[in-house]
Amino acid sequence: MTDVSEVTLPDLLRPGLKIVFVGINPSLFSAQRGHYFARTTNRFWPCFSRSVLSLAARQALGVEVLKPEHDRVLPDYGFGFTDLVKRPTARADQLDPAELAAGVGALAAKLARDKPLIACFHGITGFRYVHRVLAAAAPTPQLGEQPWRLGPSRLFVIPNPSPANAHATPALQTAWYDRLAAEVGFNIQ
Image: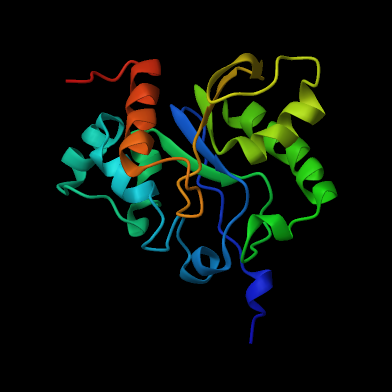
């Protein structure tokens, strides 16, 4: 029997993506189910589905609401997924800071290889490690587009869609996905 801590989510990456969503690390629940943001209480899928950002993908797939099971087909529509650290945990605070710092190099290599237009970080917490390791002299990270790039990729930070993030309502989370749509030139109606 495989130890659940040995199972992780595969990167859903390839050259030419418009947006790569970058999480801190997979949850144990998501890793067990084999899909990103698999817990029904996570706000990613409902908020992303309400956003114009996912409109073309939803129309092409013939669905109103995207679900975790759609993660594997989203690269066909310009969206990829990865994590700063691939080791699943029950909570991100169970990661060692050295593990997060080490994940920065691997992430930078993935982005340099696949060259997405935007790397969108879910949450300022994970992005702070990228900032410290690669651009400590850059301005303090805030939500929105960052003033530096990682290879050719623009960097964008939005609130973490976890229900543990009490600072971002579903409406605010959706608004951030709409803002991201505007950044990549999707039409907002």
